[in-house]
Length: 116
Image 1 (cartoon, rainbow, N blue to C red):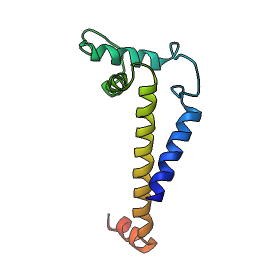
Image 2 (image 1 turned 90 degrees about the horizontal axis):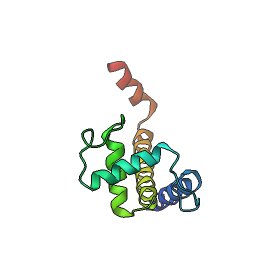
Image 3 (image 1 turned 60 degrees about the horizontal axis):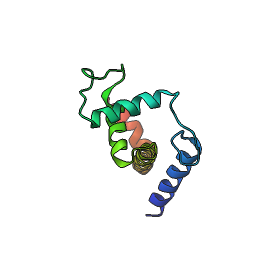
Image 4 (image 1 turned 180 degrees about the vertical axis):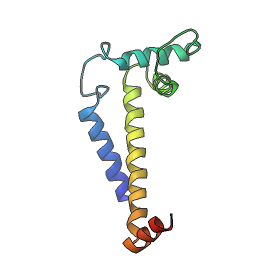
């Protein structure tokens, strides 16, 4: 449980320091690609159809993430919350994976490699 708290705090602090959507920085992101993603996400929530009514050459995942962010908050704070959550999940599952790898000794890893 302690590890989860550490990962959550690290995720929040990392995003506060490194993210343009952080509530610490009072700036708009109208001059970045992120503004395009967010505008298209908002248009999706207004009923527009992706690649028919609105178009950009990125994958739909980016737009749907921004659409969900616009449901949380109509400002960039919603996107910040989603980014912190996704960073937390990435770090948590990486931590779990490393714990799993740590339980194997070198002989087991080498035997798995030599079997293939």
